Length: 516
Image (tube, rainbow, N blue to C red; front, side, top):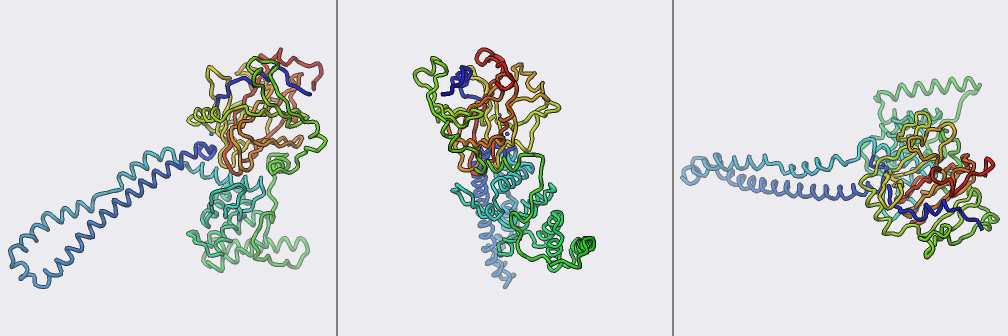
């Protein structure tokens, strides 16, 4: 039965209180916006009530004066012959109409505008909206979900109805288009067109949708369909400033391609909607993209029956650490090689809530270290919020809350030979091991995956997983390159404790060979 040396006792008995994410990168902070919006709705209702009250008063004045002027204009001289009527006319024009003017000039919106001004500083900005849109596209890619599923709210584990309107889909497509991401622009403009053709309400025009869609399809290399879509655009708006020119250009380009291939003609594109898989997603910077995303979907996990038979569970007392003798940790093998274990009941619900309470106000966008400059910076491949918290009772840990589509693409926890100064300022040496606490369950997505050997570790609230990043020789174990899959449904809270080399020399002595 395999046991970790006493290095692990350091992680097992440490206090789990530490924490460090833009609004969309943290579900925890986004929940505050729910209550902010509720308060603004209440303020809006109060404004509407005040406006209605004001309007009712003005209407009452108008109705009363309408009746009065009807009677007075029938016989003005006879009306004014009565001294009371003459007095009241003077009074109305001198006093009462001025009062009415003051009433009309009153602005009940002051309270609402003031409330908006107070809260606006916490509102998401354009970058947040763009980030949330790109997060949906990331989920779409990772979990192979079509735009229809998102638009209709058909996501696994969802208990709330949430649909995307025609205009929502159009805005999604436009976000992708502005980023030159024509693949996703096509998918979302097509979905907007599909819902528009189903006669759903919309503000955006069909001509605008077809304009973006046709050019995006052209960028994907599908000239016949670009021509078909542009012809539909011309049929709707013959005076469109770009449609005619684009159509002539596309037709000329297609004719040139056919001549080069010695083909006389080509079957015109059908009007069948473009589906997920019609076009291939362009390759990007991540070489193991397909393996990583497959593992996130639960595909390609290399845990065989034979390997599973070598996994055990046990009690662990941290090599008879006094704090663990009476209540040892429950340890389960998650993977055999490299060895990954999970500890049950590592954190109680009360501890987790306290950690979140401490962390939430100080969450900041997670950063990564540039391998060339060594400077910490934000990156699209890491979307979460984190906060390092320390106290006299615990070791420094890092808390992360993954927001909309929150993820951390494949990476190493240890520094490689090409980045020798990564932890120089800390004076701690390289990251020897990782102790990862899961502080929430996740309804769908959010697994920790290891593309090199095909493992997928799923979040379980209150548990923690542990693995070594370095061999005993100090050489990095490149098999431990891992990723945090995008959160599809739910909110993922984790805390990381990286155990560094300094101070561990006697707990885990160096080995004699490179891969000990």
